[in-house]
Image (tube, rainbow, N blue to C red; front, side, top):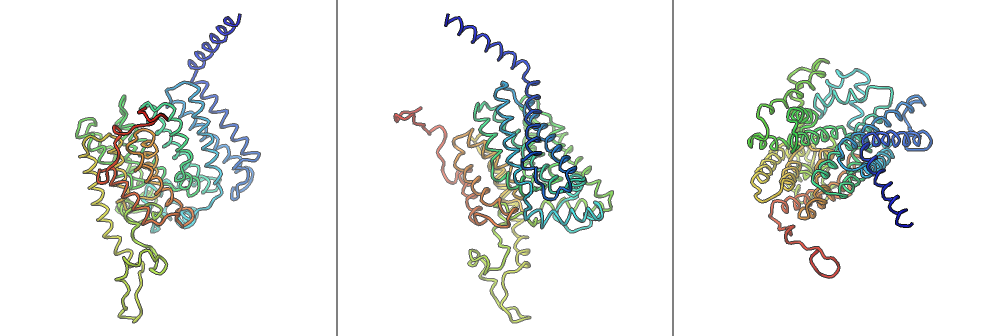
Amino acid sequence: MKMRIRYILCEAAERLCSFVNRHKLILSIALSLLLAGALALYNVSSGPLHNLNDIGGWGNRALFIAMAAAAHAAVLIACALLSSCGFARVALRQVILTAGMYIMLIAINQKAYAYVKVLQPVIRAMDAGGLAAAAAMETDFSAPMLALLYLITRGPVYDMYLLKLFAIVSLMTIALLAMRAGERRGLGVRTEVLLALCMILPQGFMNAACSALPEIGAAALLAVSLALVLDADRPKLPAGMLCFGAACALSGAALYALPVYIVFASRRKLDKRYLPLALLPVAVCCLPAVVCGMPVLSAGASLLKANLGMAAYASGAPGLMNLIPRAAVEEMPQYAPTLSHFAELDLVTNAQQYYTQAHFEQLSAGFVAAGFAVYLGACALAYRAEGKSALHRAMILALGALLGCPNATAAAWLVLDVLCLYAILAEKELRIPACMVLFATMCSASYPMTEEVLLPMVYAFVLCLLAGCMLIGVIPMTRAGNETESDGRGEKA
């Protein structure tokens, strides 16, 4: 009797699993709407969006809650479409994304340094005179980035909330692409671990949920472009190049991935005719600013300025440029030995001349050239790295490029941070340098939010430099083939 009951229960469970897997997409969409609706109802009652300081009335609050719920549901549906596993794992991933959305919304009222000092003046100029007023200002943003800011912040809801929602969705897009890559590689349950780590990544929380850096949109476009071009089954080359061009138009930091496309074209995995497609979105994205009065040459020059200029909040990234101090020597004693030659008498005032903004500008010009040399070296090392995996080469290229790029903000490092999380779970050999990079960027990513860092930029840069030396083999690492994992009895697992 017991055997028959057990047989009936097993058969019922198999039929239920078969039914669920056959209708996985419909059930996943239904669960997406349920989770998004539940979080929206919680926000109406006592959730993170219950008390919005600058929303401007209950009507705007209800509108923003609806916008957040729609974005949340779209991300969950995208998760279901990108997943090729059973319904149970898809549901787990959607729950993880919902928890991540809740965590991100906790900081919705946080006014960060980067927003108040850098973004808000540009947005207020747009409020007064439209896109033309912002185009006439002296900013470190490119013309396409100004157009994106104008597009996002036009609406009845407070602009900071709209920017944060955009940044959160961009970060979750990067996390979904990392999840897709882990699933295709066969990481198993580590795919869900990777997704959860992306959702609680301190760099993502500080840059997306707190600071609302618009460059996260460029990072997301770059990730989408690489996912489209590097798809082993059905590479979508035109769409990938268009996304890459849009990413480069928004932030010059995306240019560091250009060698990947060139190498693929040289190896005939990418038709060379598709490479010029990247110029099309650059030109199209510059059109709004040109129509609003910005000269064509100025719009083109803004792309170079965004690529090589020094952003006001780029000091949240442990790059080469951040070896230059931004304050007087007495305020930054760790730089005193380096800047001792600046302590001399001024011939005009007979006063002692300290390190000033003029000195910073002189040094930054030389560091731009040094950063370009570092970038070329990273490209050469990644290309000539024999016996290294594609992930290993990608980390060499990304880390070397971001260390040298003068305008790589903390948001631009998000792709590398997610790549490090992926490397920790996928390749044992890369765990130590990946952890070093994550620690350095985690400690420095607080600058756009508080104008302070947990770890001085010099030390964060040294950590990333040591990680780069380990990746290129200057500092030896334990190879995966020589590692042994103990099963508790001292034997090789």
